[in-house]
Length: 341
Image (cartoon, rainbow, N blue to C red; front, side, top):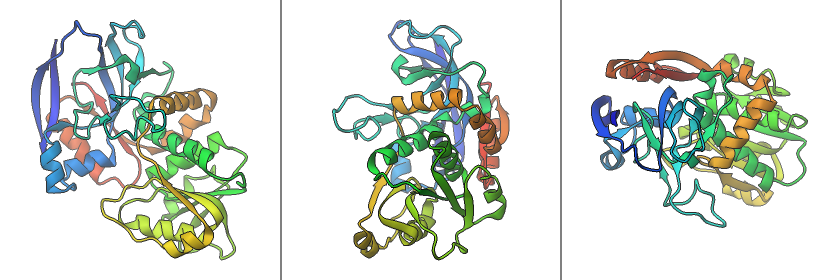
């Protein structure tokens, strides 16, 4: 079976190539239909990773957020045309302690291995989760990103102590919005405070109990636990502000990705006895939990529609370049590619 793949060969340049997919294996074949561009994809596309990393990982098909329809599944787990979300993390071993997304041996699509910018994707059936047919496809496209927040919230629930009068989310971008929306869906009775820098963006957090500009936080305000969703060079500022406003023995979840090390106030981490943990990517259980949230919280989809920035139909390389170019100028919202390759 002939497959068309769109690989990034160097920053800003996609190349079309063909490959053969064997149809007599135990792998499922999925036709991608909606893809979502992530900041990680843009870092490759714009050449913002180090020369060493680019040399090691390119050429590579980008995109790890995608849904598709099953073309064939020899295992019989899925029917033809079933709507599925594809899990980009591909473990090659199991561990009784370490989750699949933290095993150093796991392979991750669009990070050293071909992602979903393909006509067809050959994938283990165990890396697919069925989606409800009535889901908004544009929102469903970035399900993988939602699972990352669900994973972090689930871990927070496991690590944090039981006093949870107020939780803070630092960051008013896509990740902060998604984490806040999902936290409120999972823990509706806990007060949620959101901290950001942009008045217009903060207006979208109307489901939170309160929102604050980071330069105008009341001196006596405190949170019991917090999520850092800022990333890049500003993650250090966010983490240090959390340290200032969190109660002793609170737990801080770091979600924002920073290319370079950032300084944090370790003295106050020690004095307050804080716990800081990082979360990255997600696993099968997080996808199942996220899809269950779709089905049990109908308001989730409406809230998540707010971050669908633009939907671009992609039929060739030029369309793909246009999608990445438009996404690079977007401050808030997700760029979705309707995949018609």
